[in-house]
Image: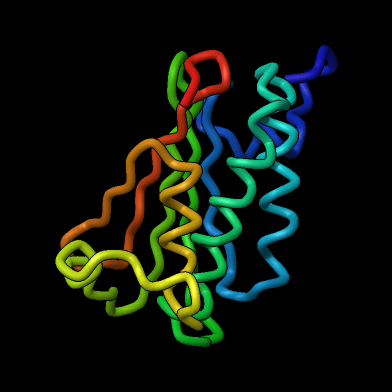
Length: 151
């Protein structure tokens, strides 16, 4: 909160000093403003060196939620959460779609580098320390080690 009692845009979107929670419309144009908020929060928490990893993971998950999860439904929403801890940054993205069969990926492994689809999971595995899906497959949670913690 500013000295004059007003709340900045970021603070209004935050659940606390280390948290960002937003619900965005299911359209790709909504991703960039959310990524702006991510960058601002990381800079304020002195984690600017984490911007690339966090933003690329957030973009991949948000784009998947919009394009594949909500399947182009115009009035659908995507919920995003980011929490910064001492050693880990947690991202959570939830869409309103039917979900996907993440268990088949676990059984069969990540797609080949030449595959047209599914490369987002490969990318995610490069930058996230841990990845988890809910049972339905419409929510992904990623944990990223902070640069101070190391990968």
